Image (tube, protein in one colour):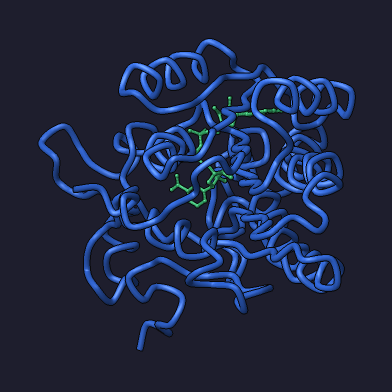
Length: 281
Ligand code: NAD
């Protein structure tokens, strides 16, 4: 039985950005089982629509909305449509985010005499760095500006952001993504304080390393044997394994649910098999 069945969000409106993506589509599917009305927002409507259709087919309440989290007019139009369809937002999950190859170095360390075709720190593309900062940071801030206005004074209102292991100690190669996720952890605390007098809690999860269809080829060879990067991750994860998307769900439901977390405000919850606690020694 799904652990979502232990939580009851009947008639609550849960807005999830990036819900056409791997993690947030899964969260949307499970959160719908709590009785919530789930709004799946994504720039890629086709993907969000497919997941919303699956949820409705299973007998729960969901609808997809094409939304660009970097465009205030688009977010505002979605806010109005959701208000018509379901009512105003009670819980916001800011899930849209990610990295971009243009903001990723080829090398982990700078060394003398690199091959001439190496994309080092010095070759990183300004537009790629802007893309990553904007998507992760502004893409969390702008939907919060639009939806939190409606959440003020509502019983059980709260916001959940998605940070990352990068926020504690940057991973090699991805300085923009690491910096943007550090900003998300910081912003989570800022929002928790700012909205503390009007009844909106704000927390985040920081997922450890998961295997998904997107990174499977980066981590494993064709025989399913871990590659060098996968081995590094496993060596630095005390529990010695990758996490699964369903292992993030308990943290999300706990933070969302005022019966469990009514005094939890401003935390970034690592769900990482001990990665962020381990010095490697
Ligand atoms: P994903 O790429 O599968 O999903 C991201 C979704 O965001 C996509 O559906 C994409 O269309 C959407 N999106 C992109 N730009 C958008 C925009 N401008 N407006 C609206 N939607 C937009 O990613 P995921 O793995 O499901 O990750 C979800 C969140 O979790 C992200 O914030 C990511 O940084 C974070 N995260 C993921 C992992 C992981 O291992 N997968 C680990 C740590 C943190």
